[in-house]
Image (cartoon, rainbow, N blue to C red; front, side, top):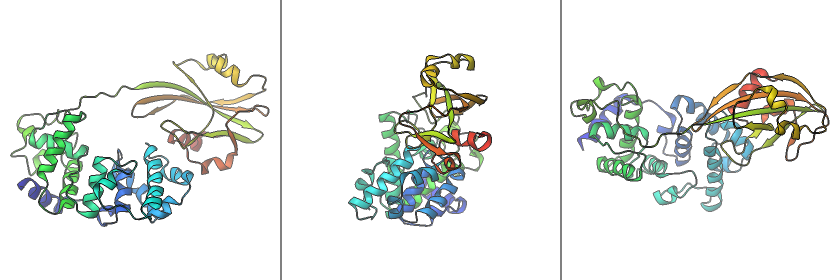
Length: 347
């Protein structure tokens, strides 16, 4: 229990003043946890405040249109979080009379909520005795206690969960969980941890075994897929074609028609490809500009993207809608497309 006592003592002095720590409202805590998944606090904070301004409570979120939710999320990435957020708000409205569930199993059953998020909401909002186990917590436990199992395996994660559970104090679970997460974020950082300022440095396994740089251990290596995409911004009678995606990483967002190739080819070869010929078959068109490649990195993909601005008054595209150019900025778009339009869009 000395671990928890020391941790909380450090936390009471060093913690950041974050708005979701000053509330027991499960809706606000849930919102913050979903936004902060795979997102730094500095990046997530404006989105948290923006969402609360537009959706002060869970019913406001549930009753909103998906396009508005995704537009507010634009630029944050991992858009499935936003879609799950909206779905779950509607589910709570319809199945819990708009009241956020107050027990761990019901919270865990919500779409987009995993073991970590359920524990965070349960402890922060309702002070229930569930340990949080995220990347920050895993790093602290691995280094301090010498847990060398690979955390991204089933047995490895279970070992970390068991250690985290053992470290829980007999009361005030919320403060303990906040403290260990904050400790990992501010002091026991992935790179350049502040070991000289650490209250555990006398007994830290990793520090004394010279393993700070190798712990925690991970088994899986992300395989990056290279994709070569050509977006076609087609002006058709002063309107532009877009379609709302219904699958993939940008599901729910709008995008231009595009051609994709399995390798990087020259623009001249794009023009004589079957994909291009079939799209513009029997159509007159003029090309007004072609961008340089945009490189956009995602977790599992590296995109090389070229934007073509084209005028064609007789082309017809199935499953696409046409929008006035001044209305495009109102639509939820990927950060890649939005960045291009912001700085280069001239039709």
